[in-house]
Length: 232
Image (cartoon, rainbow, N blue to C red; front, side, top):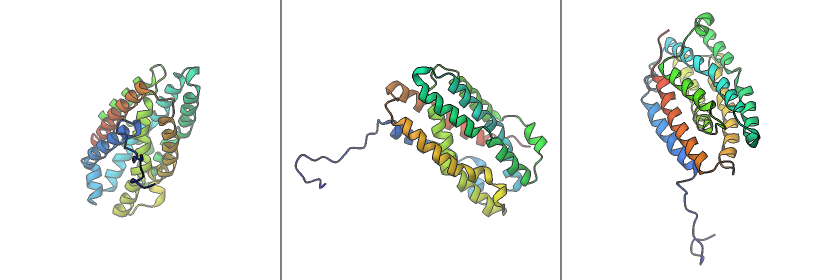
């Protein structure tokens, strides 16, 4: 339809919509990732196998907690939110073996499985997990959708790119970066399901505010997790 037709007005971009607000949070998150030391070194081709091991070692401790807080959130949705409970249960089921993929990659690049499993969360991982369990323990914790937006978006939009860069710089095989490459496809599917919920009539104004707030906090804490890497 032409804009010259009488009475026609082109649709305006709704900057107050939930997805638009989350897009702003994502843009801020991407800016934070640009200055994360290991990611900057990766872009510049200045990483080592030890750096990659360190990244996996630090990520694993938080990945283990991911399915746990999602399951906790599911248990706190009441019957009026049964559809969200079901979605969270399904998501937790899909996520609860992710740490095994990471462990196989870690061993494939020469890491010790015992050392990996005995590791502890770094400063950012502790803050992120603590915050997420707090959110998941709330009644009808719909704010957790904001965390999923950031974390699933990271897998869908960044993980495969990082895997390719690690392969190019370090000459790694596919079975050494499977954790990251797997999440491109898996998390793309998850984000599609998430977007359907975020644009549904389930989300009122108060829920939207809570989701955006949670997304903003998780974006900062995830960047902190990637910055405060404990040396192994």
